[in-house]
Image 1 (cartoon, rainbow, N blue to C red):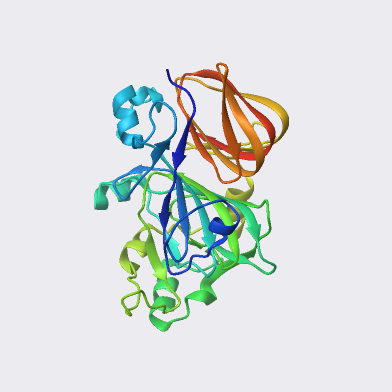
Image 2: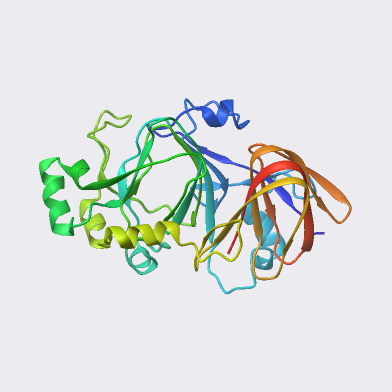
Length: 316
């Protein structure tokens, strides 16, 4: 019988990563750092496995193959739609941009990448890049790249715990040092680096940039347009963090008992940011604690989250 399933994350060690996911979020790994913890992923370069229950040890792809794509959605999709992560930035990420679906399919047979960030924690003074300065055109940016003056063209934003950033394809962005966040995105791993602070990779060489692709997909926006993107979520309720054609994301503080449900249109992803509780479904209980990730199949109806927990619930 279909029921909520707990999934094992995939860890990514990257030059800018930290160790807060080990120390604070119960992630166990021999990697030097956990820059990214892929909490829900069905990809060749990162595939969750199921922990416990009838499907213990199966990959998410095997689980979907066994039960049918209807556990994901009744919509006609040719691939799993979302990729959900924790990201721990001990250092600055590269300045980057992602393509839309049309450009992604044309160049890499991949979806584009629209995403959102929920800031779980941020050190004092932490900043991120959210768009270009008003008046910076693609041509201006090209010259800045050639002259090593990219940072002068970027819109830096101070961040604090609880902030939300919606990042459509074509928006230049970068997570800054000292930020821990949850990322909900299209199932895509296309990133075009515009600038990387002249850092060297593990091989001792500068990390690859993707300047021409980046310049091809950047969308110029005014400050007013950028503010509208960030602060307009098409909100239908007070818990909604972001809503777009690719995903709907809610955040809930639960102290007691809260009822959710899945219909045939979408699964639910539950990401536990803090606290202890349980998921209750059809007479069974599933432990839910800080750092846990659950996949709740589409179409199973009502289930409850019980306890004192802070969670992010994502669906398509």
